[in-house]
Image (spheres, helix red, strand yellow):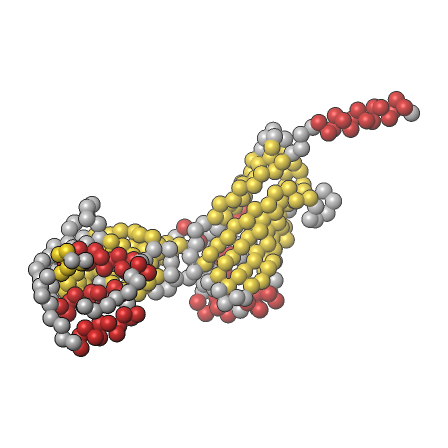
Length: 353
């Protein structure tokens, strides 16, 4: 009896020295601005599109682990404040992992891998997802979170969790682009203007065309060879002083912005703004009204009373621009205005002298 106990204790000691198997998970996901119901219902779609990848590996790599199950739950949170957890639940069939294995959302919808897969229709109805999606074909703007777990299903689900990951999609559904600056028909634009617009998406593409004298419409000008085409993050762009054709004083130009929308499957759609034109100013003393317009646009409605006072007092331009007692050019003024537009908070006060 004593000998048997000693052998048993030795076995336990040897077992304790065997390194435990570890499951490692890495995830990657598509960059999306909008998705449709068929995109997220990938397990039932006839043409599913790639949304995410789950890569699993076992350590040590020459070991294998049986009876693993991937479980994914989906949480929704909308800008309106409405939110629901576990709106979608997907569980794979048990599988063996040896070394490394990769799953995409398309794989998880295939027979032989797909186990349980369902949506909680009560929660979806509470969120109003179907009504919005049916009217626009797109899912509502919000935060879509996938919680991913890997279990070892030895004694029934859920079993022991071995790895966990999370994928977050921020869906904005951008739909319009509104141009702000320069205003349409502005004849006092500098050679290196700051372009500004409003767009809900993260990426835009700005195009600038020269408008030739024989071109009767903005559309004619925008159908030619572009002066500049540039993809930019955010909603502003300063015309470069190098690496692009210089805007010439006295010439007119047409510009527009396309909002770039990332969709499932790697496709990119565009939202097109209206066309606008402007003319680059010829160097010389600027008219007083032009200076006031430039400054008023840059400083915004907060200082409207100041500019109303200037106009009602019928001040006239001396032909000289000064800043802190030193002469400056119109281009230097425009550079200062650009700083105002990029960061309005740097202006603490405005007064008339």
